[in-house]
Image 1 (cartoon, one colour):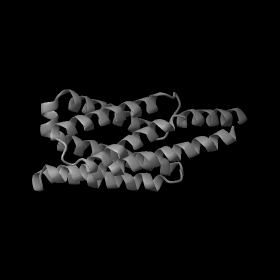
Image 2: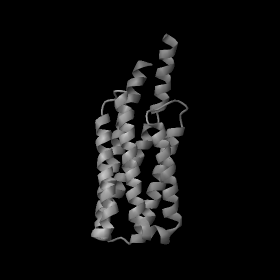
Image 3: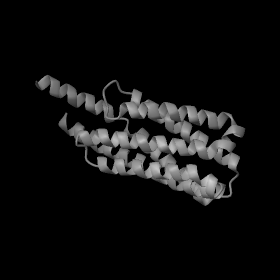
Length: 196
C-alpha cells in the first residue's frame, strides 16, 4: 500500500511540473489582448498574422504540456486535443494570409469556443477530484463561450471594429483563465513536493 501511495505522489509531481508552460501561454494571451486595445487601428491582415502566431504557439505549449509527462494529468485529453486544434488553426492563419483575413472572426470565434469548452471540461475533471479553484476554471470557460458567440455574431451586426474589441476582451479572459490554472498547478506542485 505504501509503495502505491509513493507511486501516486511521484506520478502527480510529474504531471504538474510543467505548470509554467501554461503560465507563459496565459501571459502571452494577456499581452496580445492589451496590444489589441492599444493599437485597434492595426491592419486586419496584420492582426490575423498576430493571432495566427499566438494560436500556433499556444497550441504547441499545450501539446508539450500534455505529452511531456507519461503520467495521467487531469484534463490531459482536453489539453492535447485543444493543442492540436490550435496548431492547425494557427498554421492556417499564418500561412494563408488572404484566407485568414477573410475568415479571422470565424477562426477566432471557434478557437475561443473550443478553449471555453476545454476549460469547462477541465474544470469538471478538477471538480470531480475536489481540486480547489475548479469553479473558477468552469466560470472562465463559460465566459469564453459567451465571448466566442459574441465574436462570431459581431461581423454580421457591427463590423470589424467591434470584432477587434471583443477579441481583445476574449483574449484577456483566456489569459486570466490560463494564468489561474497555471497557479493552481503550481500550488499542487508545491504541495506534492512537501508530501514526497
